[in-house]
Length: 250
View 1 (tube, rainbow, N blue to C red):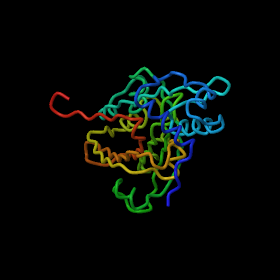
View 2 (cartoon, helix red, strand yellow):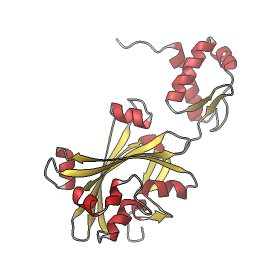
View 3 (cartoon, rainbow, N blue to C red):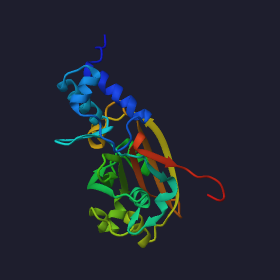
View 4 (tube, helix red, strand yellow):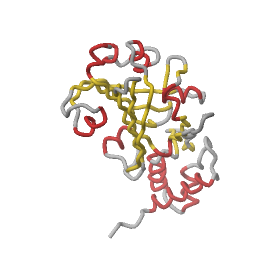
């Protein structure tokens, strides 16, 4: 049988309900541990555990020596068409964050891999083909990551564009480098699903195992119909608002 919730879980749930209801405004400070202990009839160590549970859910920030503050965190709004737009030297996620007046961060690793059966299908290459992988964790400075975004490029492009092997691909990123050698993206297709995160995603994105994530596979084609890159994104559902527009005026 499942174990009943502890006193700390009960207090955390009660405070979380107040946060969701707006009883505590974003950026406000919670009452002190002593005040919460009196309110919920618990000792301060139990209240401390409850606050840590809320911090694990990214609902509050615990400021040692100061108190506990309600986290200010609005979902990133991203127009699906932003991938084609450039703001300064940025495209895609970073451009959306900058347009919202916030500061993005990206942590990137670059390596050579060989395509497994899933990646081979998306890139339309034989299993085991040499592929360039550019893995990124992206978010807003001061907040946990919003998404992982891993781009896979056929090795023939990496050989033609050595800059793709570097963390910094220069102004405009990968697409600008591909355009410079005559491979402008003409068509995107995207597949979107929802699931629970695996352990690696929980660690990178700082989320619980029961927090749903969106998974997006995006494939980009040039004018000849050749696949020039594939990107796999894993997005924390409540940290991201993806907007699609349709119609001739979109």
